[in-house]
Image (tube, rainbow, N blue to C red; front, side, top):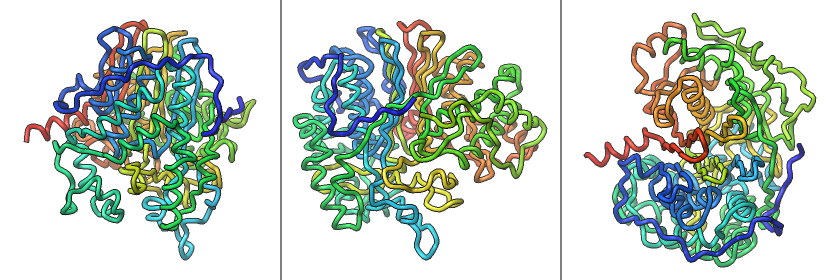
Length: 580
């Protein structure tokens, strides 16, 4: 199916009427308890639906939307816009997103709000003396892609929401204006990026105190400029962002700081509606995001490899070994084949069952593979598909199910805040292959398929995913954490469908990650030592990490009673800080 596109300036004709309610209640930020899991993933008191996010205030914003006339679409947008205030190291309105939506009428869409390369971008823009200078693609003006998140949020509210953009923006603006207690996790992110933040005075003025030090956990974190931007958007709509005063300020900063992004780039941004990656796993239907995300392809590819095995019957060591080996094979293909399908052909044979069987035939339970290369997927009738991120899952009783993953890329993105706006900009240009074989900030190696071209979208690992049983949605899941997003979503699905875990258990279970290069298997500290040693005995080079990313998910067996869960490792981190 050919992708449909919508520009930032397009007028949308929609069937759903937008009903303007009195302003939604603003979440009470004065007594935020970051240590309580119940504050991150909740169902509304009126039984309308459920919300899971990485921040209590964002989750409360979604619940408020559900309890005051909205549906899961409204709740997801309310959560996303609030996260731009309270979780600004991960996401905001200066970045892009992917969404997989199942509407109440049964239609399913994959909505591509990924950043686009500016028209002046070119293949060798980060090369200096023939070598890629990684700092240029990660920090500052040249790191910024054209953001698309707001186009997606506006589209969703018009397509199927019951609330207006103003309804969901104003409560978030109130939080930005009044402030909220900074979480221990946010404090840690600021602390680990101080030197980069100090390079940009406007950013430092927000994130650091007068002495240039990170605001402490618990500090009432106020963002007056961002509140003003949200209020302008509430009154003027997204034209304010894409061709109004915001764009004027953005372009002035770019011109003053060696950037290449232009007013035309902003006005011509295109949101695309793509066909989801659809695959079957043990009688369930999995809907993932297509390229330029690698997530949908490789979640499906790995599930196809696993399907021949009785996962529940395997020992823990065998299970994690199998997962790591299947991941390794999929990521080798990612590096070679994946890119923006509007510019390169991505073989649809990657998700063929026959190809998965061919790959899995090479997996040995006795020894980890070494020196593997990409595979050779079969031809298909159609030869292409028409670490610091955040994921939102929402669902409601009418059958709307939402999985949105949104990101600045690395923490605080490019570290650039446009003066007077409070808006952090992404560094998504680093997700292109700046030079074949040169790793990006997440250690991922790409090839020519993901090279830089004007208007192209960089390859992503974001994997918003829905799982259906017949016509009934049962799982909304997604994650944050760069390439570990793919493997987190995979393991969450396996834990629920194969091992019969609740959604909370599925997220709490130890995770492994293997991305082909570097040649290590990343294991979490909570994975039992005996299991780690068993993997080492099979040839895995273990790289121990506190945790491999963060996941949010919702499960329902009947579409009426919802179980929601947010990442327990982040909650535990905040809980540990509270006890100090």
